[in-house]
Length: 450
Image 1 (cartoon, helix red, strand yellow):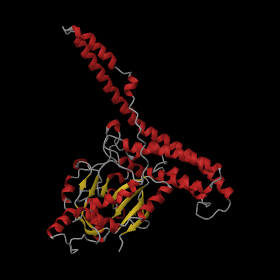
Image 2 (cartoon, helix red, strand yellow):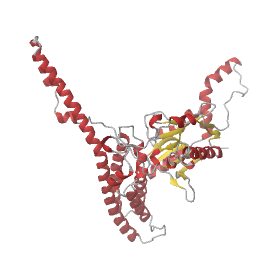
Image 3 (tube, one colour):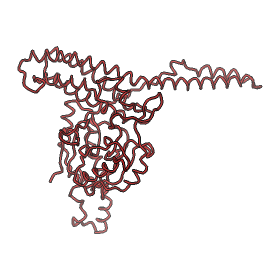
Image 4 (cartoon, helix red, strand yellow):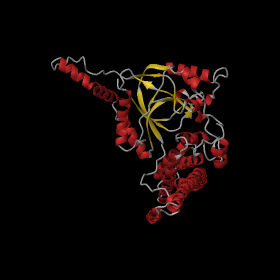
């Protein structure tokens, strides 16, 4: 699916969607395939409709606390997709449910709050219907193209079979013709059935609201990023858009994403707070050094003076080089890979994932964990104008990064950077007032024990 430009999106959604946020979701799709983003969007539809039903019930029961919880949940899910009108309406429901005015001041009259919730719920349902219509229209274009392709394939197959039968008519060995005809007749399916994709029992993918990560920070990283930004955005150098270079406060290693309601957030925070980072690190080292330790014990006659016990200090990493997610000739996302001298970072991160996956909170993406710090991403470029693609849509902005990658192939972003904490963050980086930086809202974090 070609990434559309802002004008095309505005013509469909108007001011109902934050384009930058929505394009981040589209960026997750594989080239030519919108399955991932559409599954998130249509999964959100189911969540929203269920939540509206729960809101109606809570309103009927005059349960302001429940209304506040539901408003908070749907606000987070809609914000993840950039549905700003729905988000703002849900925030009103959340505040009124907490018996607050929009400015945060208390409103002791429950009847007044219930009436305000009723009005806000009516408005947010209307806003939801409007944006739902736009999203279904947006994704229908690709469904229509898929259907046309399938029709062409079916027509080709049918014509091929027909041609084969015609050849059989001229074959001298006509005795085989009845059998061939019978096979052809029984192999045919109605055209409608051929066009209908097989049904599956796979549940829709939920809208990610949070992610587990290792935040990256430090003077060396800040200096290296500033130098990179100055170089690549200079008209005398590569002349790349400044918006594509990620702010320092957003740099992190993603360990996994989650779709959490209020109780899910509380559970995730509880799991996070229960992580003993030093113990997990020690266990990771033990697992890696098990064979070495066994060999040392054998050579020493079964004695161990403690010199071969795993280290108990923290873990440091080095970030060096620059790579592209896509081909270098048509790059859109550039990242820097981390490494550690002990070679245990990956397994350490997998152990951090485990309790969240075991609890069912963390989404299983069915692909290897790619530890990386995103340095450059064209999805954040305003008025992203790539070349015209199929159906005359704008392609996602890409760059020829071959020279850039060569220059920064061995670039040192940070060396021996200590990992100090693991955090649970909300999706969607927000600007830091008074600065050029941005950061993700931290739901909770845990630090390495001293």
